[in-house]
Image 1 (cartoon, helix red, strand yellow):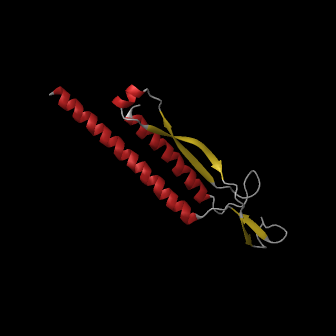
Image 2: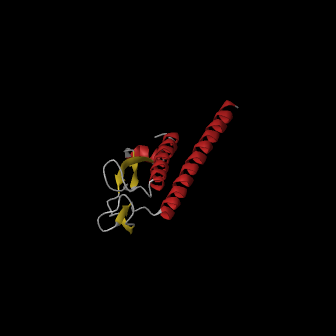
Image 3: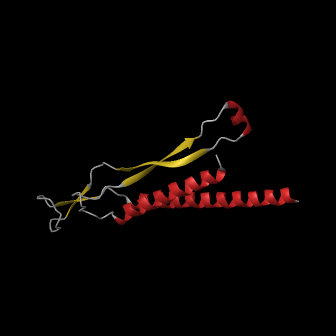
Length: 140
């Protein structure tokens, strides 16, 4: 597997994660969706797919795992109920169901995903520089 493919897959997975986290933050106060009820927080499940290699090739090549998005799943925890009897979405008892989204935790997750994205950009740049230097040396 090409190291550029690994970095590209990491960039793609973290971009998806950033987009999903941003949607969660944007909908932290959404009490009514098209499906009815409050917005449900979503999480991106990222897995590492390893390429199967023979024992001999494993000795010759470094084993790499390629990150990939396995799924985007909805959080099924119950919504948080806030007493707001005048709200248009209040139930008969006066409680409004808000998404169970912790904005501070979501911001922390967003910063982590952004840093992982930046790390993949740095790795791709370093790979490009190494490839150019190898070509320069080979051409000398």
